[in-house]
Image (cartoon, helix red, strand yellow):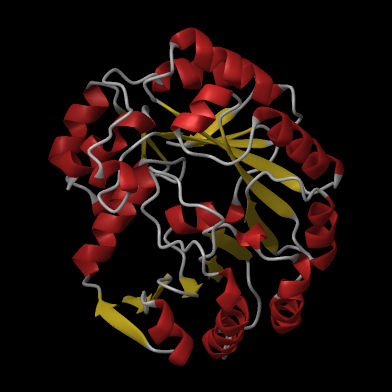
Length: 342
C-alpha cells in the first residue's frame, strides 16, 4: 500500500503552479497538523505495512523536522526496512534540516530545483538561486539518503545548448534520479489567469532524453530518469497499486473507489476524515492501466487493449510485445498511443 501525505504550505506560489498550496497560512500549521494526524490514524486503520510514504505539497520543508515528530510516531508501526519514505523539499538556507529529516526516517529526498539558471528561476518565480540549490543538493547527497531533483524545461529561455549545460550541472551532483517536466500552464495557475505563457512551441524533450542517456540516466517513465534508484512510490501508481491520500485535497484509490479529501482548508480542519467517493467502473480502471502503463516501463496487458489497432503500432515499431505485455518505444507519445489503443 502507498501513502501520500499532503503538506499545503508554501512560502510563495510560483506562477505556473496549479496545486492546492497555500501562502501566508503557516500560522495555522498546528490546527492543520492536528487534523492531519487524525486523518492518518483513521486512514491507516486495518493496514499492516506501507510500501512507500510520500510527503508532498506545497512545500513540506516549510515545516520544521520537529513538526513531523508525532506524525512519524503514528507511522512507525507501518514502516519496515523496505519502506521508501520520500519528502519533497525546496532548496533553502536551512541545510541542517536535511539530516534532521533523515533522522526522523526519511530515506529519499525529492528536491524542487527546477533550474540552475538565475534568469530561468526568476521566470519561474522561484525563491532560491543556483548557489543555494547546489549547496542544498550536496548536503542532501552527503546525508546518505537517495536524492532526486526536479527540473523544468521547454521555457522560452531554453535552447538546445542551455539545456545541455543545465543537465551537465545536474550530472556533477552525484544524484541518482532526475524528474524532468515540460513547462505547462495549469488553468488554476497565476500565469494562466494573467495570460502569461512562457513556453516554447518546439519541445526539447528528445535533446533532454539523449543527453541524460549519455550521462547514464535511464528513462523509465515519460518524465523520470534513474541512474541508481527508481521512485518506488511513483512506480506503484503506474503499476495501478492501491494508494491512500491524506491531507487537504488528497486523493486515494482503494479497489474500485476513488477517494477525495476535502479541498477547503477550514472544512478539512473541522472534519479531516470526511471525503467524497467515486465508484470506478471496470472500464475506468482499464483505461487508467493503459494510460499509466504505456507512459512507463510498466507496460500494459495485451488483453486490455484493442488488438487490431495494436498490430498497426507493432508494424510501425511504436510499441513492442514482451511476455504478453505491450510497451511503448517512445514515452513522449504515450498518451496518443493510449487513446488509439482504447
